[in-house]
Each structure stands twice: as C-alpha cells, then as structure tokens.
Image 1 (cartoon, rainbow, N blue to C red):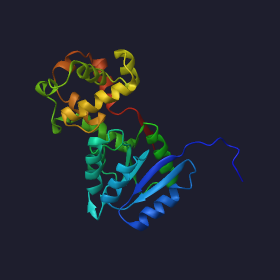
Image 2 (image 1 turned 45 degrees about the horizontal axis):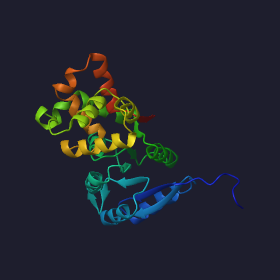
Image 3 (image 1 turned 180 degrees about the vertical axis):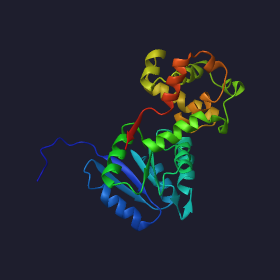
Length: 249
C-alpha cells in the first residue's frame, strides 16, 4: 500500500565491518529505520571501490578491517585526503581515550561503541548526515583533555602558516575565533561552498585531516592567530574545536 507520506530521499549508508556476519547483522538492524538505505562491504578494497564509485551520505566503518586492527582508520585517513566531504562514523569495540582520539584524528565525524543500542546508532547516523559530530560526554572529555595537553600535537609554526594565501589566513583566523562555516561566509562575504574549498586547501597545506585537528594546532601555538585574541575569544576557540557536537549520555 503506497505511503501517504511525501517521498523523501533516504540517507545512504555504507556499512563496513570486519566480518560478513557482523556486517549483515548490523546492516539488517539499521535498515529497519526507513529513513536509511544500506550498502555493504567487509574489506578495505570493497570500501574504497564503493566510495570511489559513489560517495555515501555516511560511512559506518569498523576500526578493524581485513582482520587488521587500525586498518579501517588508515583507510579513512587516506580517503579523507581526497574526499573531504566524506562523513564517517567509526565503530569501536571500546571507547578508550586512545581509540577515541585516533578515530577523530583519522577524520571521523562520529564514534560509536558496539555496546550501545542500534536505535542510538540510527540517531548517530542521522546527526552525522546533517553535519553534526557525535560523541558522548566521556568521549568529549577526552577531546577537552587533549586540548589542554596540545604539546603532544605538532603545532603549526609561523613559517607553515606562511604558505597560506591571505584569504586562507582570514579563514584560519575566523576558525580560531570559533566561527561556524556560515558565520565565516557572512564575515568574509563569500559562499559557504567557497569556505569549504578554502578549508580543504588549508588542510592540505598544513597536513591535517579535519577541522578538529586544525584547531588543535592553532590552540597549541603562540603567534599571529592567538595574538589577535582576548581571553573570551580564546575560550570560544576551544569550544569551537568541539562544535557542532551532538552530546549524548
């Protein structure tokens, strides 16, 4: 019987787990949400081929693929170098501090631990598809702690920032102030699409893979960007590292 609801485009999700049975079980559970359509893969090669052919709205990928711990993160990091808009959720067996930080450094937009219910995973997928970052309060605390211990991250030096164009440096300053893409576009009188293009070029030039990692670098250095900021602006910058984030209990 045809639905009386208007036909809405479903969110296309590529599910990539470490084994066929786990992938199929997970996909079957997620597919019960009619807002989501599913593609499957169980190997790095399969994921890459599928993504290159047609980038999914959301990639749900295990940190372990091809029976290799960390292979999923390595693949995600590689894909993000060229597919900057790729929205990925990393499946973790346990959300330890190391696992969480590695996942976000690889370019994850969300992390999901296997001991959580599928209903919550569906919400995670929906939020990430809309551009949100998904993390619970404990995982969020790991990122906050990382911000306060940034010496472990190689900071961007003045010389490294010198490779940026004047306009790219304007975007970096806006990021350091905690502005969203929309706010940056308004301030610089450019489109949000242009802001994204600038950010991708900045990522490539500074050797980072995500907005989060870029802001960690900015917060870890003294110099031009920070000299323009007062304490209130610096506080907003730290908040910007973690926003927009969907926080769940």
